[in-house]
Image: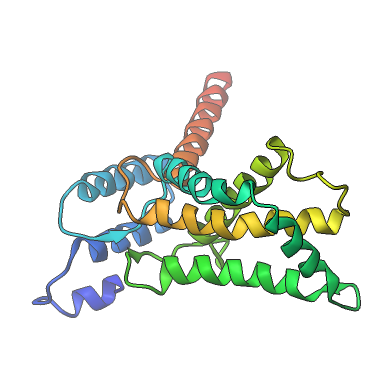
Length: 222
């Protein structure tokens, strides 16, 4: 709901999520770094008030929960030789240079994570975009789970066993990635909204701090 719509409905009831959205719009419009910090401080105070079940923030705790969930779900598959057979199947059928079933598996993983995050009733997750078109939580969850899958396969010596091709190695990773992505997603959203500051806010604060530091140095030089 925009601020104009809110003003046109004086008797309307609002939840905390709507107020947070208006504060986010306000933060994007102010020019002064001091004003942005004040808006962020207000948002943090409001986020601490009970009353909204919507997951909006993505904190370092969410990253840790994603890693833990991805590891737990991927561990049972790491010792299974069936992963090798599945990866060979993924790379056996090609359409030109494109491995059909490997591509379908990657699309399945992306769809699975997106569906769990945004289109199920497990939790109400706020759809936040990076650069105007990239869903932030989706991309980070996929990146975390892929890192878990590739790292565990390499560390446990399952990536190079039986001398696979590079494409088969990628296929092995995507098999584990499917399980790790499921675990990372559930590990992130099941506990609900995490405490702490959103990662993007931390980055913005660092940037504002650097700008202020540069301004002070410039003024002193003057």
